[in-house]
Amino acid sequence: MTTVAPWPSSSTSVNADLFRQVFRRHAAGVAVVTTDAGRGAAGVTVTSLASLSAEPPLLSFSIAATGSAWPHLRDARTAVVHLLGAAHAELARTFATSGIDRFAAPTRWHRLPTGEPVLDGAAAWLRITIEHRHPAGGAHLVIGRIEQAELAEHAGPLLYHDGSYHVL
Image (tube, rainbow, N blue to C red; front, side):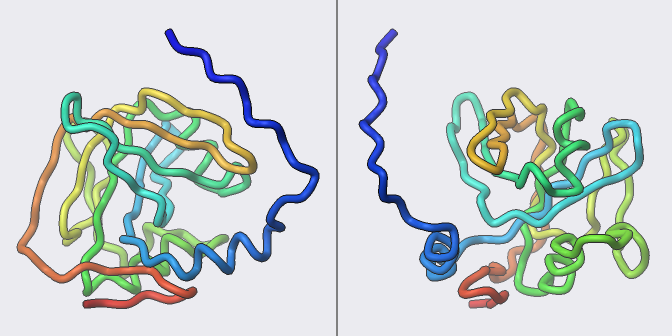
């Protein structure tokens, strides 16, 4: 096992506003993560989705520790990650909005036989077993093992850039 000593911290760091401005310039794919930890369906829009490994199949995403979906993902054993296509900007906005029932009409969804909520019409979805949750600043990094994957008809991607959704 290799141990790496932490890099010495400097007293100056990038402030949160500049950090957000910089990452608004980074175009990212858009996904919605849904779960049910026994208290009803919950979900959130994420732009931090990344593939980690093909063997074993692993992915990661981050979620704010203050987000309403965090307690559900903290307690859940499984979740579904939905990759959104060009036609799903409104769905992305719905799951990014606080204080609403994200699963109410017009959101169309059903449950898998294993119980997880799945959004109808996503470009693709992946059912994951949550293997790790790591605190990271004001967020948590979630790592999941992909147990099942489904593809829909190929469509252009939905991207998030500079504070809004875009299609190619």
